[in-house]
Image: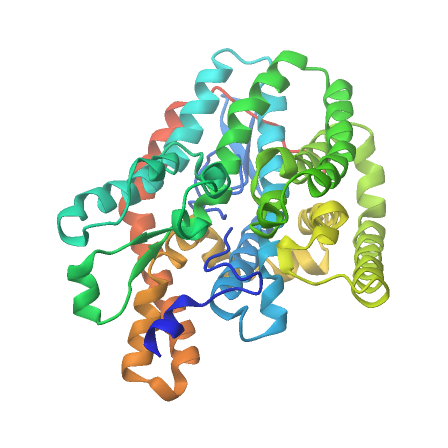
Length: 438
């Protein structure tokens, strides 16, 4: 009975779906750059070259909402229908990442040492926490006796999002690459199978792959209009690619969320954000701000129509992010909605701007990178504690302990691991960026 509680299978039948988030050091003058990074945009005044910054505080709140959506997906999707849509939080992060990164790259395209500064700042932001987790896992090997082999090395190489698909030919559970299973010693302590879940690192892999490719394109092309054309072409091509995959790859791979977890099939999310960033740096910004609420409303209505036609008229199954009808067109509609949300968040005086600027949401947004990394790692331990000591309220206690535990660990991690490296980013400040008008 306890082991069955610890599996927490999702609506797609997978032991662990997943997702990504961001973290920020409040009050720091640092350039943000991705779903994992703060949105602070450097400008330089002409007097004494003093650095100033515009900080869209509401985007911290948006990060908080997105990471809570993912948390609810992992801890409540089996028990509440609404939580089963939490996977869409990753789309918010992808669009936000494309928005921030493209703005940084475009604004720094004429700067010296632009490649060095960009990759050093990304490295100092992303790698310390990620590889600290892997170092801890490695050091625990003599006690944990992990059941792994070389295939798991794809995760530290930021290619783990493809592991389940590349090794599908191997016998055994294809989802095993999304977790690290403890050996018999630890299992004996808890009298139950115990795992560390790493499957949610997949979105970090997609992000990192994007960061390796997109700077080369932006710095090579340089011209804003040409970059916008590339973004539009990619946004139009992505649904076609996903449709072609539904016609050519196996049903098993589709149910394992191939459309959801690979960079080529999610490039529209990242470049919708990029397109918005480029538009805000040109005459299109006025149109965007004028029609942002129309974009929110129209994408909502379009997705509702897609849902009703697909599930009610065509009787297609609803399988979350593994649903083909969502994968082909739904992802793009959700991403456009996320882009409109960003526009609303950065618009001064907008109700959503004020709501997402509330201190509790901003506080979670600040540590949301760590929150995301840690939230699902110890899922089995939270569930074991709840079922062992509070069996009649196991679900509620699991969620509560997971939320409080993750908040505590993320806060400590932010102070001890992330902040020291964030301070080093100030050494690479030749990338200065103007804040687009809002």
